Amino acid sequence: MILPLSTTKKLIMKKYGLLFLLFASLSLPATAQTKMADMCYELRIYHTHPGKLNDLLKRFRNHSIYLLEKHGMNNVAYWTPLDNPEGKLYYLMAYPSREARDASWKAFNADTTWQRVYQESHVNGPLVSKVESIFLKTTDFSPNDLMPEAGKVWELRIYTASEGNLPNLLSRFRNHTVELFRKHGMGNKIYFTVDGEGSDKMLYYLLTHPSEPAGKAAFDRFRQDPVWQQVRADSEKAAGGSLTTNVTSIYMWPTDFSPVK
Image (spheres, rainbow, N blue to C red):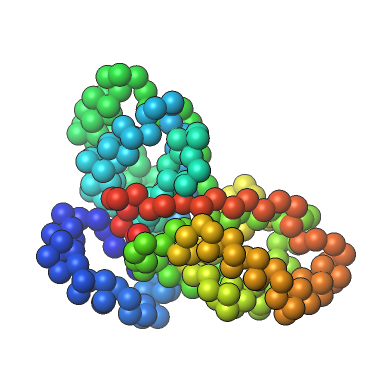
């Protein structure tokens, strides 16, 4: 479920927080699942200058999330890595289409309130040294489960498929891996391929765990599972080698202002 972070919603959650979470825990109707699958997603990664991460988080908390929403963008989730020496902020946005995304960002950047906030936040120097933007689309097997999970850590995993093997990697996830993750206590949240450069080789997905050690222990159980070992061996034999050339894992904690916890 993608919910705009409006003032009204914040007031409702403050007064009826438990009730809201109970309703949010219900399964999404098929129409909502379809809508999520059709959205254009954007993962944005901000690299901050030394000592500026808290200032950036403050700007988002007090201003940016509301201005982004004002201009028709969906704030999905915001995270900071547990191990964060580079002072990064990861966040996920959703839009009806790429064209709607471009129009919304154009309006946001032209907003005089944003321009004032931006200038005021730079009084003691710029906050952000680099911005990465990756456009994503959900896979056909993605659970599209963005319900709140209070107290959980999130894990972003990024796979680079070996030459020509992204379809085989996706097939392995679709037919085996997602269910095996669930078997070993991992929370399958959402799975993406890249919409743009890297569309032929990249898989991004998000899991939840009770903690980082719990996540690592779950992966140890998964790797030792005889079913997984057979699935991996069969898939690599059919493909003539490993389906991946690189796997990146980033454990993250939702920010206090993230709509999805």
